[in-house]
Image (tube, rainbow, N blue to C red; front, side):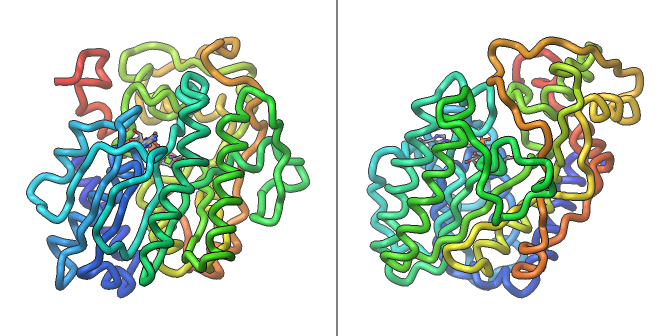
Length: 361
Ligand SMILES: NC(=O)c1ccc[n+]([C@@H]2O[C@H](COP(=O)([O-])OP(=O)(O)OC[C@H]3O[C@@H](n4cnc5c(N)ncnc54)[C@H](O)[C@@H]3O)[C@@H](O)[C@H]2O)c1
């Protein structure tokens, strides 16, 4: 299969996982903040497919993005041929002048990659705090709103106590309020607090998701998160740079599993509750992840380097979700194994000029 086939198959998998619930989007309007981002563009691809093949009436999607890290060109390609998908420039840290009646709000705007939130700490805080409040205000005015999805992060757990790994939603976190990652972790935590206040005080139907390292086609070559970074280096014949001793672990969730989980949380999650979404089957150290590339990009090698200054210090040593709650309430489960996901991602990336160390074509 080539990358386009994989991506079609990924979208079909999301729609299959949603089952009859997908019809709840028929004739509805969704405000999608962060529509030009990695996750946002996948949501758009799924809505485009639903409009074309599944729904009796199209779902209108309004993407609001200020393109601080988003890919405007790719977004316009993703939404081509579908007049129901509208992209506007908007900064959610200002009130949004949306006049249309909204049925769903997905708040996936933010600065997600550590290198970029270190570069833009105040923008990161404002997006998660003031941006969340502005979107919740808009939601509050839409009396019939069916769902509001707030994207928090697994980083709200900080560096968890080993006894709390796999980490359940009830773990309260071990986070520094002044450390180099605080602009992200603490603002995501406050975003969760604001969301729950709006749910309790005004009845806004908020559900929170805490994603654990989602990856897949669509991540930009300069995203700087570990999988696009390793892939970029491997495809350019350079040794994969592992930070420190490489024993720090992560779990990686393939994009089609993650998007299924997020949409299930939007449609079926308990209001005011938070859900871990990830893949708990494949906790892996960064050294082993780099070695796994040898099976996906033959000939790739590994080098151990000190943490660069551009990368925020104090990264968590282990990260692995407890998914029992998402399984029970949402019927969520991750299906794609890490190596299979990597293979699909590398196939996609190797077809992109940008991953070949050349300018985008
Ligand atoms: N992808 C993951 O593995 C992951 C993990 C944990 C949390 N999250 C959270 O999920 C959300 C989406 O993640 P992603 O991977 O798509 O990130 P991304 O960086 O690829 O996309 C985020 C998008 O938000 C836009 N944006 C940022 N600030 C904005 C603002 N003030 N107004 C309007 N648009 C703005 C960016 O331009 C970008 O298009 C983020 O909030 C992120 O923190 C993602």
